[in-house]
Length: 239
Image (cartoon, rainbow, N blue to C red):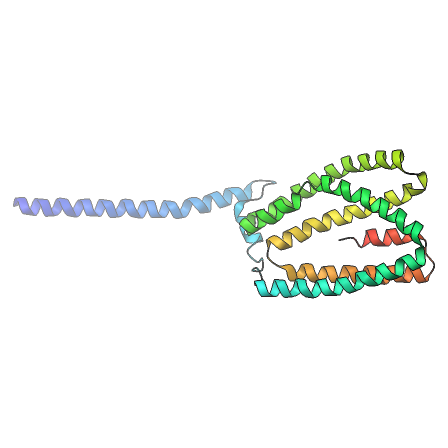
């Protein structure tokens, strides 16, 4: 055989070997993720990344800026009207003393709620906005952290209430504190919706909550209820 023939045969063999290696690498790259997924799915008590991806694949896309702004604007107008009606009617039925007592309890708890929340709703919004699939995983740890800090805040409120205020306000402090639990949970939900850029759901929920609260409060007032039942209604419909 001539030298040119030997070179041609050698080049053909090299080309064939390279093609075989390329096919092997391609097949291994396709097989390894499948094996990893099978291992993750078989692990007891664990949640694989594939499961999380599938769980959040059906999340709705964020609404447009116009839809969010219009929803918030409509909700703000409606809730303002409801709030004005309550501000006008409630003091006429309960009197200045009862309203003042409720405001004291709500003010002390509002300060405590700032420390109990520690800005965690902002963490929820930012994490979900960065990664919609992974960010939602932070909701459960945030709720747990808020629950722990709420216990500490409740102890501080109990000390303040016992030291600075009369025992007549003790029941109001307890009622308003229970309402803060619902309000804190609702804050996390609102933060999550903001991260998903879906403020229409938030607006509708706000309208429904305020409307139910107004109807229940007005019914209780016309029935001659005192400040404690009104505080229970306000706390139960908080958020």
